[in-house]
Length: 466
Image 1 (cartoon, rainbow, N blue to C red):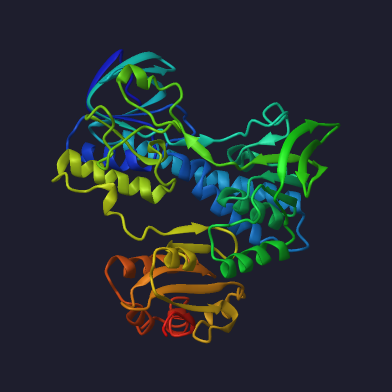
Image 2 (image 1 turned 180 degrees about the vertical axis):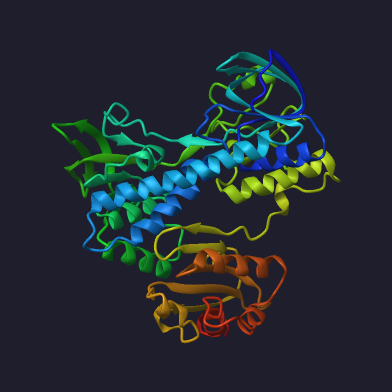
């Protein structure tokens, strides 16, 4: 049960129930420390990932792929949303019970505002509660960015990613403003469910950070699935019409319009610091609104830390998890862990098949002055990877960038079935100095996706060797 009093004292106060804060709070509570976790929404116990982020979106990816041509798109989508909500409800309750059930931990539900460097006021349903703590973690995450475009914020057809996954009505026509990870993932999901999807991207191409060869394969997969990608598009406004929204945009020097049933703003996320009263705490923020931290994640107040998206670092749940390790090392360890320790942090775009990356691209490696060799193969041509044929997913490409002089793996881009798992093996090899040849000559189970490394790494398509 929640503990609500007029005034509480704690060893550790965590504002926001995200991954990093949750892990830190649970660890300290199990050590006997008095811990209080504040979460402003009862729908967000556990943070963004299990409630409105990673878990529900990836569950929708899976369910969208299971729809048969004979299945009604609307009925299948409504069923999928219901199943996903059941999963998130289970996780939400589990996170609350797991934390509040600890002997020395309590969860307060309400909005927290700093009133001094060591005190916050929490507006709970049972009245205001003052919490004073020796150490405080700011763990409030991030919120969707809504571009300041005429008519967009006022449009009744505007949806954020959170709004969209809570709707049971499948939009027949969906416009997505922004071609980053979020935009591409949602484009792939809703196209598979049966929506007509148009993705607007202001740059000359989507996934511009990738090498040309990998980018071309990824874009072809998306286009072949029926997603209309409009690059070099400047969306200028949205106007509500009779039962639809009219997206106005400039493309190739001409004014154009598109009628849709929903407009998804996928312009990224910003740190959730508004309304926290950070000035009263003496906590500085950056020009972009993130809580300013040092390499130990301490703020301008040494007893206050900031973890996860709110500190302006990479917006990944697993980075927030590593943030908790750094903070715990400060609270109960040797205080040596820092953000500079992180090496070869992987990332995945959950299109189908997934696109996973770690380290440098070929372009970045050359720009950094490395002499390199490039090993690459289309997935359909990797003889040692029958799993791709077994699961009927042979699209994609695998690419390794390798230092010619040291045989160190500088980076990899894996667009393939199981890429979200494969990339962790590559990242681990990079962290521990395992050479490319060693990774390529290792023994892997069969049939598995990992054994693709046996073929790909030995297939050198370019080399700087003279």
